[in-house]
Amino acid sequence: MSADISRLSWAARPALLEAAREPDLLMALLLADLMSPSLWDFREKIRLKTAAAGAAAPHGRSADNGPELVMEEIHDYMDRHLFHASPREVEEIWGCLDLKEERARLGSHEVDYVVAVIRRGLEERREMGILSGKQDILPLIDAGAFPDYEYSTIDVIRAHRRRLHRGKHKPLGITSCADEAVLSAALAWAAGHVPLEGVVVFGSPLHYTTLVERHGRGYWFNGKHEYHDADSWARECASTDAAAVQKAFAARQQGLDRLVTPLGGHRFHTNESTLSPARLARTDEWLTRFFGAELRQIAEARERGIRFVPDPLDEACLRTLDEAPDAAAARRRLKELAGEYPGSVMELAHYAFRDLWVEHPEAYVEAAARGHLTRKRAAGIISLPGALDVVREVAGRDSIFDDLERIALPDEVLLFGTGTHRDRALLLYTLLRHAPYLDRALKDALQLVFTAADSFVLVGEAAIGVTELRRREGTAELPGRVLLRLPPPSAVALS
Image (cartoon, rainbow, N blue to C red; front, top):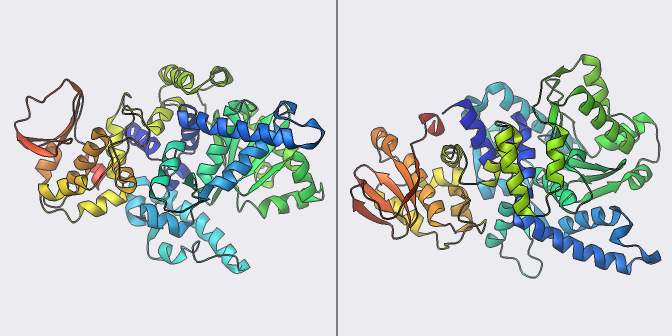
């Protein structure tokens, strides 16, 4: 599997370690959200709430007075209706990474840097007496493990409702801070008040946060619990002294090691920037104007000497996206931009969106192989009937995306208990790739076939139709026109 395919697979299943190494994955999620009807449904709910709040406000304030009321409602709606999962809860949902395995896959330097950042932040919280049991994963790290934080589009966030059994106040979804940073930016854009060029996600693998800017005014979404416009932040600081600003900022953001925008990003620990000098200066200006002083980390990066790496995107491509009136238009425009800028975040977005009809759908096979829930289930499979039983347990037949043309990964199918025949075929394929009873030759010969009528996994000389989960001898003639046939993934995906 080439490095490029691996990168596409990271976009299909962006997780904490991959996003730490490749910050553009956060922007791929943002652009994927723009293509989702779910985002636009969410926007309409916020618009209704904003209109009601404006009508009830004094002095005839309304959403037409400016973006302030909309931004406040985005924050309030997210704060009320989303559930932020703690590290231990993430472990319960998605399982744990083996850090030794991750070092071999992503590089020791990258993984050790992220673990050190998170360890330092947790130790600081413990010293301050504010580290709760649900947050304390230091024993896990000491044991060589780490919660498998998966960053999600709005559709996967909302799919968590299927497994929540709360009553009156059941959340609309489960999020991490990275999810909240991306979603707040996507909603601010969809509400029509913020251009994509005015979005910056910043922070570190420990905590991500978002500033959006329009016409010289900034709005800061610090997770789902805290929100500030420039005026409320100025009151919070109570001083324009640079040291006071830095102290107030540091109390909320433990460490700042990256800026991420749709037009590139900057990583402070390497001091490399895919933002052009002009774009980086503009981002610095926005942050300085909002917070009241230049952030120390940016000033120090400039003093050390920044290495600029060219990024192919320009503002013009973002402006055409800003004009999209709905999800379908955003999807059409992003498809065009992916062709114009191959390998860029514009292409990555379609893999984050899980569009099945991308240039390299084999990336989904590699992404599927990394799921810990599926690997755990596969470990106990000793025969083909055992694998079929696992798939048979999936009672639902609908897509978490409400779209047959988008693919859910096996861990999602198991977690949410539903999947189309295509989703369940990828689950069966992945179970067999991990099952200990199959020898390497049979695993390497497995194929995944989608036809117009059904989906099949080819095992040796037999084909398993997923709709009926029945074995049929012979693989040459399958019912229905073949739409997609995936070759086996490389052994790297299973190492």
